[in-house]
Image 1 (cartoon, one colour):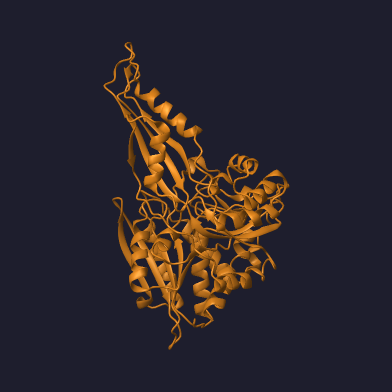
Image 2 (spheres, rainbow, N blue to C red):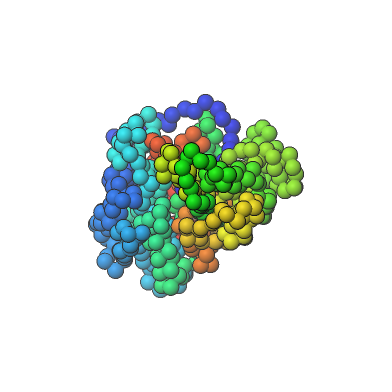
Length: 466
């Protein structure tokens, strides 16, 4: 999960913890679910996703969902057992409207206790934050959607269309469950549209001032290549002119110096036009200039120099891993670099690989694509979804700007867009830039963001399926 809107950086004030004694039953239920699922180490190599699925199933059954409403499927994800979970909230009899699918993922990037200040798989409330792996990505989304379904069921509410939770089990790794679930959804459910809990959300300035609600409407294509140079090697006392490490280093230097062509779409121009008004200083001015003229060189230079905006301008490729040599006194027989690319929608992985080869200009550098590539189109923010989001937002942040954007990272949503379904991400989280630790050490979510967002999906679903 990722969302960021560059805003004014004032001194941060920690959120105030919710008084446990003052929790409503709905808040207590959500907190209990949050605590319990954080405890499952649903990272690669731990095989804890099935245990988390069993826990969630017990929650849904206790709330009144039947066996027919719940679908658990086993998957082999790169040699490891995982599961996917689907739960259907049935429409009232006679309903004809097409279903809505709601996405989340149960797995997390692993975390080592020795590296964290607090135990990563124990929910800790401290200094106005909930700490733990998955507190943001994506067990907050899982908690929020689950608690909303349980709350609506307890109220006896019947939607005007089927609402289907689809929770994947390996979004952070192979996305095997994601792909299979997407195909099942297309073949058996055929929803009108899809909403994702794993991106977007409320951007706050560092003083806690609400800035905008970001709606993820597109994602860049994720593609990773291994670049390898080989030669016969030899004894280090007899150096060769074609040292594999030097040759690979020269290739990486050319990639580092290359900037892919600047691209702009209606979505990215609209994003910069709105974000520029909300972002102070030189960066905000550059956003506005780029929105008005995507060829403005000064604006491009400013945006490319900022790590938070460079990804919105076009394709990026960056070296992330190196492996070379086999002994300190031997010339390397091979040197390999891993290069990760985030490809702008409309530019394929094949074209990106061809451009990298052209930039390097050395046929001795062998390329290998090591990821399954999914290229997905942009989705439109539908009027009915925007109206439902506005209805929910106005109860929390009246009049907040709604800002569609393109994600530089990737989520389950790309696989549904590829199948032709409008898919947008609408997390209920409210975060400052300094609160974003997804995938990193000491991941956290403000306590007031957790409780403040519990009505988020409740009102969206009420509006879309009343």
